[in-house]
Structures are given as C-alpha cells and as structure tokens.
Length: 230
Image (tube, rainbow, N blue to C red; front, side, top):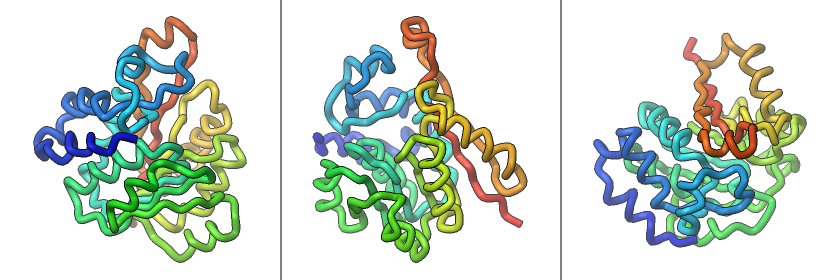
C-alpha cells in the first residue's frame, strides 16, 4: 500500500472534494486492487497499486458526495481487506469533519495496519465479526458510519447488520447489486422492504458498459441506510 497518495486527498480543496466529477477522476489516481479482473473496467486495470481500492469510481464518487452532507465523526469498516476503501473514506471524512475514531476490521492481516500506526485516531482490529468478542465490542461502541463489507453470504451480512443496527446512524452495504453476491442482494432488498419506516435508503449502482459487454453481469453497488429522526 502506497500511503504517499494520501496527499492527493489532503491537497484537494473542499470545493473539489464536493464535486462528483472531480472525485470520480481522483479515485483512479489513488490506485486499485487488481484482483478478479473480469469485474473491472479499463480505468481500474490501468491504475493498479497505491491504496489498493476495490470500488467502481462511478459508484463511490456519488457515495462520498452523500457522506459529505452528513455529520460523521466516527467510522467503522467491517471487512477492510487491503484497506484502500478504509483509507480513502477516513481521509475524505477528515476533510469535512473532526473524526475522532476510525476502525478497520478484518479476519486477515491487512496492510492498513501501516496506516493506522501513523494516525492515532485509527485502529485495526483483527477480529471475526461473528465472534462474541466483536459483538461485545459493537455493543459498547457507537459509530456515525458503519460500512459492512465482510462475509457476503446472506447469513453473514445479516449477522453484521444485526450486531450493528443499534450501534450506528448510517449503515452502508457493499455489493448490493452484484450477480456474484446473491446473499447481499437478497438481504439488501429485504431490508428496504421491511424497514422502510426506519431508514432513508440510497443506492449507487452505476455499471461500466465495457464490463457488461464482456460478462453480462452486474457488480458491486453501494447501499446506504440512514436512520430517520422521529
């Protein structure tokens, strides 16, 4: 993970970071994880390395524009993998808010630990989200933003939601339209149907035509559930 690219975010103005078009062009410069290449457009293939991000720029840029409108001072990412999405999100939030706590979680060792060592407000937890230890952690902590991207089975994502729903204001789910993650798709659609009185829902599901032409499948997709105020 090349953390020097953080400066691309730090040196961007708030006006620039508020612009979806600017963000969509910035994200490739931060660098992508080049695994599972058939799911990726050319813009990802041409910009490997750096943060090792696993996102579509045309989805994540719109998602970040929604986040900048929210007051977010604490963040947790369940399933950070290499950590690219976590670093990008944390650094972006810090431009708009006083972020006091940002936590990355995964069951594997992650290079994001190097980032967390440099930033006292961040921490990497090597934990299984289905463990009692993590459940107790969530019971005793609250986050303005919770990003769920761990176990992609229906049972796994449902577990992560159930242990998180009382510990956060904004819950985000990855892979909500992905044809290779049917469990997440099923759970997200179920949540929208059953909890429409509890949340305002937003979706960022743009695809790349070149990927569709090659695979005839949809990938990724970001779903945001923001608790309604009563």
